[in-house]
Image 1 (cartoon, rainbow, N blue to C red):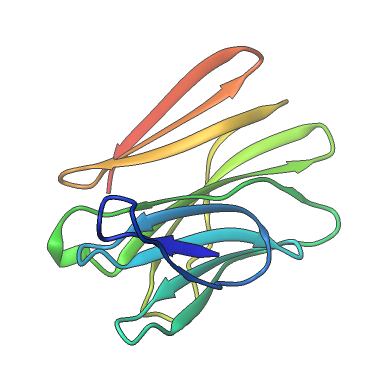
Image 2 (tube, one colour):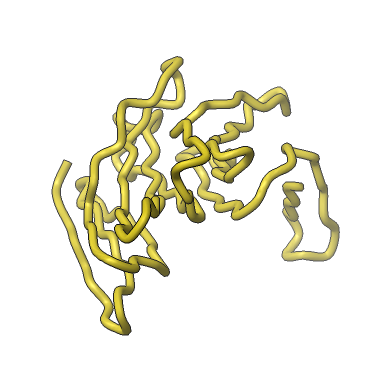
Length: 153
């Protein structure tokens, strides 16, 4: 479900988005939501259009050999890159965990292949933030330690 209030929480408008788990939300430059979530070993992004219909984008196709964790989405700042969003998510395979970053254009049919940001034994509690001029900041926890990685796109 997606809920929105335009009067400081007095009245809420709700819309059904899809079924799934681990939802995360960001807003584009015009205030329209982009929602990532995990469903059937696949990470999706739903993009709300101005006519209240949803577009669906596949961020990552998983399989039964991969354990996917919660996707977290962030929006870009520069107006000229408004059609882009960023998604980080963990994948565990056997004894190894990796944090991936997907940068995708909501208007293109397919997302580019995600890039590995970090790897280790047990990576979790990841988050992402984008600052002006598109500096990407990603944090995660491994064995009680918090790590930060950042780069300029």
